[in-house]
Picture 1 (cartoon, one colour):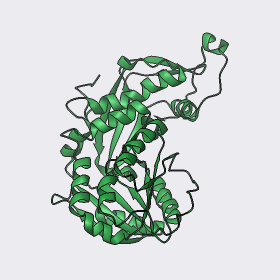
Picture 2 (cartoon, rainbow, N blue to C red):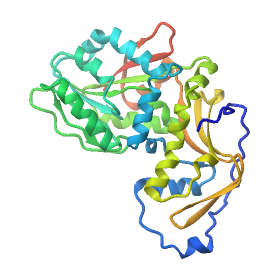
Picture 3 (cartoon, rainbow, N blue to C red):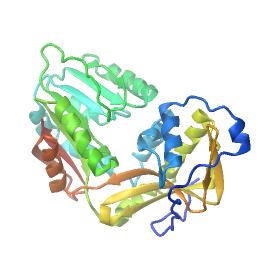
Length: 339
């Protein structure tokens, strides 16, 4: 499923401005059915120009498992580098957080990295992992409960980018601290990143946020990380269309789209797209969407930061910038931000 020619030299054909989705006579006869949030956003994303869909919809059960595989790839440096930082600097990080803390993890996934944090903390009180993929989260939480029987673990299936009400702090708890590893902050547009950090600063007032941030580096290294030789990232990207077919009865031909990821140097970001390999049309909920050859669906940004740039953004959001830990090559950084 991986397109071996995917590279930053691909030529993308932009969608025509203002184009309306075509409704065929057959599709017009179909009765449009109420859509899930995923369905509504997919339909809106196909109708806009240029076409795009939020990366949060990557993470159904299959997508979450594929991302776990990505994290183990030799080319994908962020996960192992962040784990190294967390492991080597665990005692210093625990000193910043303090005893009896409640840990709130945003986009918790498989709950792997938090184990390093929990092992270093002094009597952590409760762990509140938040993730949009409820099935994957529940399974991971059960495994964690078996290994940490004295820790209160309360998984929350929710979109952490939206305002939500957390449970009241437990009696005797210390600081409430957010944990946001993996440089997920880079998936946001700059204004969205600021909005999320502002939301987190209010939610964690009196505590803090421990956040992992990928740093600006050699574009060749970035390109390799998002175009792995095994094609797992391509499969992860294309799984979005597979999910649309399964959940929304969409008509995507998976062989008709290719994965493409490249580094946009002026914007300091990786861009991921699904590229139409030919002129084709896709039907979704009674609407038919025409694709030109080379036209794309944008699926993800992964912005890269400088240490100084992230600290400045955090201050704008209402945090006080604290300690920073990096690896020797300065590939990745972990920041303590006091709320």
